[in-house]
Length: 290
Length: 274
Image (cartoon, rainbow over all chains, first blue to last red; front, side):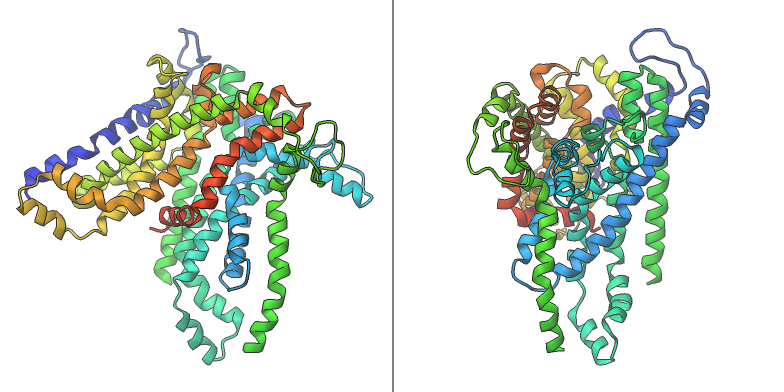
């Protein structure tokens, strides 16, 4: 291709780049600047306070609690979604009647807005008349106020996130399984390798690229958890169920600590970047080894 | 081996039923509640033997559900158009001119995909307020487009890379410049991947809550998620009307999913497998 043609062609990505610069990169650099100020979010007056917000971050019990919750939301969801997603995929990879119905029912919630999913789940976990308490009463147990304690509410919301998005890892694994040639298994069974051996030496290694994609997708999704928390607890009781994302909005719009809120945002960004980079590198290495 | 398979087949059906029951339970509860009268105090597990339409009347009249659906439709459709056009355009040079510089641009685009939206909420809100873009259609449209574009560029770049360059070269010999080559040769071939782009990014725009919550503060321009969340906080005593509102909010995507299931799943797989 001629050099001139190439230069003209490169103009095609200018509109996209302009959007990124205006609405992602520029705000991001501003975010770094604001994170060093004591700005309240609306007044003209503010001053630079150096690393004060960052020091405050590591001393703030509520924010550190939100950080721990974020890790539970992110890693808890990822671990269960992948094990369960793989189990579902292995199950659905065999032929039986109603298979496509099962797949549709598991995958459908992925399409639903997480916020609305949170509200639907409210009908199940509600204390008065909630569907789960109805079942408890039916079996002669006392009803439980499921969302009243922070740690339990965090686990329940992790579970809700898993239930909603396990379909993503399931379809990724299903596609991965369908790419493994049947003859590998045939050869293995002729050699007398049992089902577990086939899973360990054929299925798992060949699924590595799928595992890598599913883990990264689930992890980023879980670490960004926001809508479900807003729908079910809005971070409460107290600050016990906040994630870093809900903490950012809480500090900005409720607490009017825009500078501090920007600091939490920048920290969240750096944390997610580091974690996803480590994971991607780990799986790249694994794929090469295998 | 054959016997083994038969034995395996027997436990499959009950297991399939249990899985379906667990995963469908929330939707089942929602359906039952949406059609039940608020005076009916039977368990939420029991479907009503009648249809109580008033829940939907309340959701539509008091909850402004139709306005919410209208706003969300305008925003989603505009975003999808921009995401397709800008995405396909940007992908063309990235797939065809594999220079070091363009490799850097590609890495930059993938980096944008990693930015957690809320980490830049404070400055983004300030920028939009400065541009007078809060509570406007264009404001939320450019933000959602900017955050969904990387996925679109990623999918189109992978797809165009797999199209043989012989066609481009033929067009170039016939005297087509890059513009005509793109519009006449490349664009018509992008249909299958465009389906994936529309589904993946469209769903994210339709379901958006975190940006809309802060960028659309005027009650006149509420999206479906905002409409439902304010309806829930105002009608916490009428859970049945709230259920009707939630059902109306998810019905469009569910119907779309059930009719185009194959494309939805293909889209997901396209986006995940490099």
